[in-house]
Amino acid sequence: MFYFNQPYFLFLLLIIPGLIYWYRRKMAKKSAAIRFPSIKYFKKLNWQDQSWKQHTLFGVKMVAIALLVLALARPRKVNTEQEFFTEGIDIVLVIDISSSMKALDFKPNRLEAAKEVGLKFIQGRSNDRIGLITFAAESFLQCPLTVDYNVLENFMQRIEPVERKFDGTAIGMAIAHGINRLRDSNAKSKVMILLSDGRNNAGELDPATATGLAKEYGIKIYTIGAGKRGKARIPVKTYGGRTVTQLVDVRIDEKTMQEIAQQTGGKYFRATDKQSLFNIYKEISKMEKTEIKVKKYYNYEEKYFWFLMPGIFLLLMAGIFENSIWRQIP
Image (cartoon, rainbow, N blue to C red):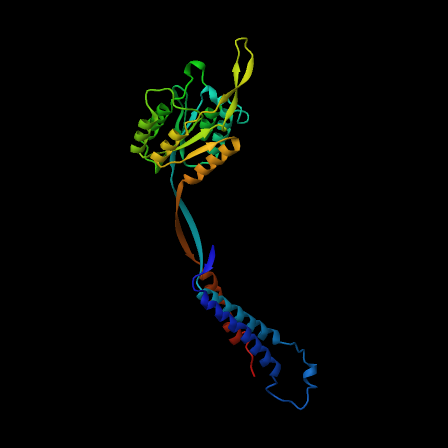
């Protein structure tokens, strides 16, 4: 970037139009210094108009003055360097993969909607370490905390509903598993986003105890209840191998989910379709912003020599020509 450190000197450039006006008036009034009764003898001489020399000298002086004024204004070139410091957030996504997550009240179903929205959430983050845990009757580490979002996205895409033998909803154990991943973190903020569509009915640790541990480690938990209100259709397989849909009650323990969020400083959300789930993740992403600090360094280069030296040179040359080669004798 180029700028003038003392720009008020630029007002001196206003002198130049005044000098030009004065010079033109002077030339218009100029008359011969010696009078002759007749010019018939001068017509025989090889006479050439020499006024261009005087005009040239004046023009050179004006350019020199302009250059010297620009030099006084201290032109500078500044180079800016920026150093970025980021204070990332450690986030663990905890997603329910019990059989009820196959419910069709979300398109195409709850789990696929959760995966799609989770991928968009990951793609919208930067400089944060994100991990992935899934749970049903047991919890499973899919991906530890990482900034390699491509790897994380691959694990997210591979999530499938749990096998029947692991079916259930162990919210307390899922929170505990997330605590194990976050408790030793030095991040500015430690966050868990827990998505479930049921009630805690499995595991050795109840949600209240797990919530107390999370609070002790400074972990904030956002909870999301996924499922429309009332009833939802879930595909089930018959003994003959056919797949049919069955209408079942949506049973989300909203009270427990609210208490988990409230105790840890988070917030509870209810998602009734994919769009509302997307909006929830978007809101959480806004609330948990990564802090980026920018430190700027400025390097200044003085450029007045570009104008000072040519200005002095032109003044000297004008003086030399005016008093020697192009000297006018009255």
